[in-house]
Image (tube, rainbow, N blue to C red; front, side):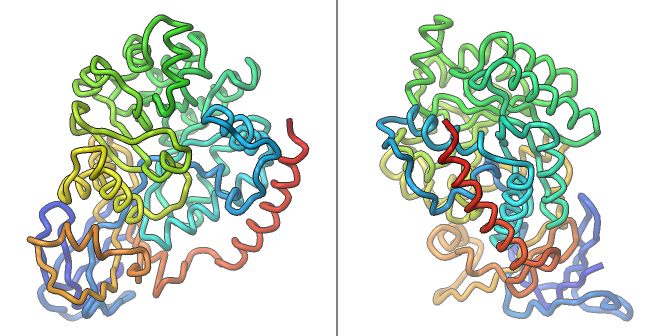
Length: 425
């Protein structure tokens, strides 16, 4: 076991402060135990002196994209995109078609590394690699396990690359779930998923007691296609397939919604995950929670792996487009934990902790913690990270893998990916 000595523990739900010693049990969904004083033998294992440091539950990401990890700094497309659909065609769909199994593993290792260094010990990921489908989920899971990051994965099934690739996505998903891995059934978006594929995906999710993880109304193109092809709007289509009544389903973005869709979602059992910075980057619009209910969590959409940064962006952008105060920003930041716990997913137990070296110039107490959370806490304050009771980051350095080796691998394969993208049409 790991002992955290002289820690200032902050309860992630009540903000109650406690100066104590914390014994951390190792293993998935393990416990933590508090001791006012250290008795004989209590510090027989590994010990960290946390004097002057804050300890609280670590962070989790509600929607990530491992497949985009090697995109940072890549050359712009030859043809400048004029709208969101063209951004997908000329950038992201070209990138995911260029991924090899080696690139997928490197992307996953780097993403897990970045999560760890930012205090994120659990990630819900939505993966796409239509020319390297088979084994992709197990590769990502293996990389996350190696670093020590909990995960809930899915493959992004879509008809955009043809029936054969859609079938491969369904087979990869079933193979992963049948092996006993916890996961979701991923779909790209309504406008690239026909009724046959949608029905197969929903039946697969029902068979394994899972849910659907899908992008919803990220851009008006999704709604226009749905009205033209099916005579209904996206959320109505998902409701008709039973997606919104699956408590494990995650509906991502949910930007361009009408009043009836908002009412459906306010009564749905599914959860919404939105990604402010990605929406800004793609110029697709702004999230507005009004009328959607309380099942709302935050993600990064693959832009980065820093959930503190995502929460800050959601709060600031929301001042002009949403009804979001400091407590609500924090609640959305932490909603992912409730989603995981209520749906019995493992790997996000009480023994997932982050130790913060927070150099605040002002008093910190339960009453003003949400303000410090938004205006003060940053990734640079992450000192140590504990995942499933195991110390995976110590003094800012990942302990489970060699950071420089991961970076060298990613840089080499990133350059190769960019070359391949130039040849992919």
